[in-house]
Length: 87
View 1 (tube, rainbow, N blue to C red):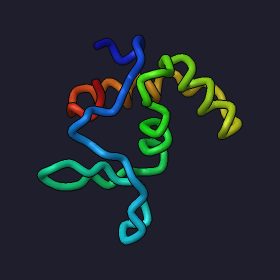
View 2: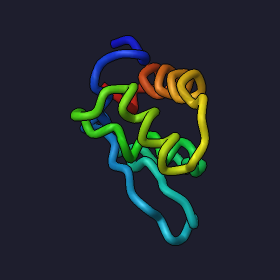
View 3: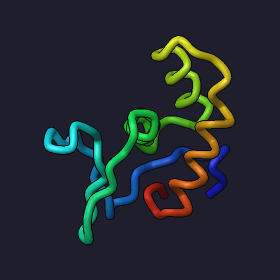
View 4: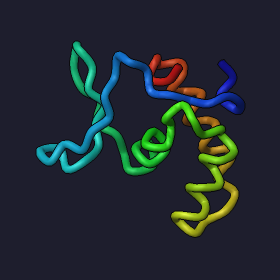
């Protein structure tokens, strides 16, 4: 799937959760864990399979009162698809 279109959704192989010991959101999977930075976590929290990329970008820009996040979000989504985090 193209990272700029579609309805990104976290793969069933991964679970996104807050991990107090890491003081961060993490992606858990059978072989381990990926510690996420705040930006990655905020993007992935919105990848629920019901929101288009444009809506995710708009929500992030509104929530954090910034603009022009489209390219950065799409770059991250592309990488997340390549790593198998998203379907």
